[in-house]
Length: 204
Image 1 (cartoon, rainbow, N blue to C red):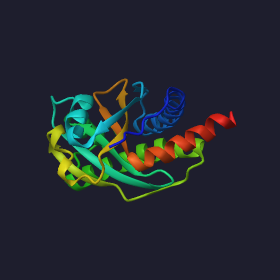
Image 2 (image 1 turned 90 degrees about the vertical axis):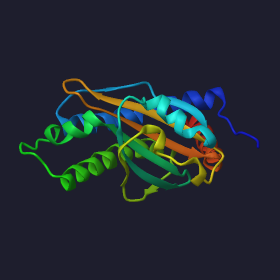
Image 3 (image 1 turned 30 degrees about the vertical axis):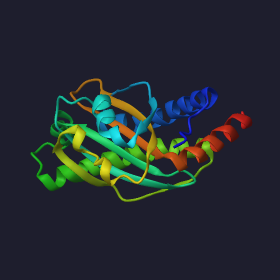
Image 4 (image 1 turned 180 degrees about the horizontal axis):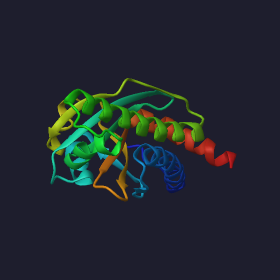
């Protein structure tokens, strides 16, 4: 198997593009929550299918059970995006969104899907706009609730050998809320990404 890796220049360009896109996503989250949002530096790495669960667990942390929202995207680039909430984030989400009374499970799930959809759309549309690579999205779905991080993905069900993993952590300044946005692009999409990054660098 030949692994298609980004060059140093391509990686730097993707880092900058992702920073811009994540900033847009963070601004939308801050508007929703009424609080300043801290963003981690985007992490960019190649993830092997056989140990993807361990890679995600190392990124997110194994201490707390998590709930995850999944959304696939397609176009010139394709892959999967996940928004992963820890237990505290799930508990505080309704309050952060302005709900004064206790909400039921259906409302909580709707909020998780809505926030996940906002983050995925803002981030990936930001990347797609800069790379001139329009995307379409599947509806968001909850793939796990109060689950262990390393059980989010079953490697035996994956159809790719390796993928490009982009991840960022969103943390609110005033409340106990953290979520992670992870994007996985499989090997065939990496080739298209490299072409788009080269075109982007030539245009600036």
